Image (cartoon, rainbow, N blue to C red; front, side, top):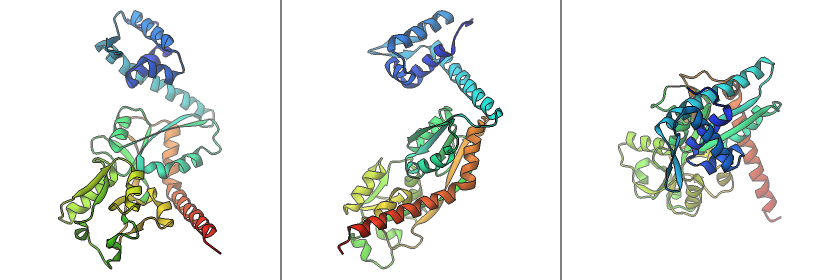
Amino acid sequence: MIKNATFRQLAALHAVSRLGSVSRAASELHLTQPAVSIQIKLLEEAAGMPLLEREGRGVRLSGAGELLSGYAGRILELWREAGDEVAAQRGGFSGTLRVGAVTTAEYLLPPLLVAFADGRPEVKIQLKVGNRNDIVQMLAGQEVDVAIMGRPPAELKTKAVPFARHPMAFLAAPTHPLMTRRRLAIADLSGAKLLVRERGSGTRTTVETLYREAGIALLVGSELSSNEAIKQMCAAGFGVAFLSLHTCRLELDAGLLALLPMTANPIERDWYAMHLATRRLPQLASAFMQFLADDGQRLILAQLRATSGSSKRRSTARSPK
């Protein structure tokens, strides 16, 4: 029976489990490697069995370690939530807001987080960015409280709230041959090199759906995991891109990229904020979701207008008199 386990010991085990090494766990916990090893050793003595096993130059959890790590994560999360709820009872929000966002959302989310945290000095922000699969796994593993993505995951039971429109479009360099055409359809793109994100990303799924609905095979010219790489290759004239307009507002305003002359281009979908339906959401995270529902669209539009205005002022300043 584990009687004397401490939160520090549980945190050490959980960090090693998540990060896969004692050194990375020590870095996250701001401890030395020996200090983390001592905490694990004390927990092993309390459990009466080894929790870590040597594997080459690293370590892996034993069966008992995997079991205890799962419980440790739940205990630590409950204690964190307890602290946040006590703070809320005192009449204010404090603690850490843990948000996961797909890579495309990182272009619009930081100003929203800043606006939410403004006037709440006790609130800390933890933002994790990754591809869609990464964020779904983080949400499932309760590593984040709220996830931001283009559509709720079918593989998880979530409560999702749409909070802003999400424009996506076919783009090319202004000098691309297709820009000389008066009216294009998806079929006209069959001979163009299409630059797309990796499978599983929101924009990739959307463009696959558009081609499927049009009854046309999607022929990928280049598949990249970075919006920035796609923008640079597209602006250089390498091919046609399908991107979220949130990612390329500066390039559009500067004339480096342009919308292809197609009907229904751009198309609009929704941005969603979501959390696990089976989990009680902390008050801080619940307040953030309500903030997005109430003010998200307005703040994003203001952000886009500010970006556009700033780009035009820079362009005017560079123009010869």
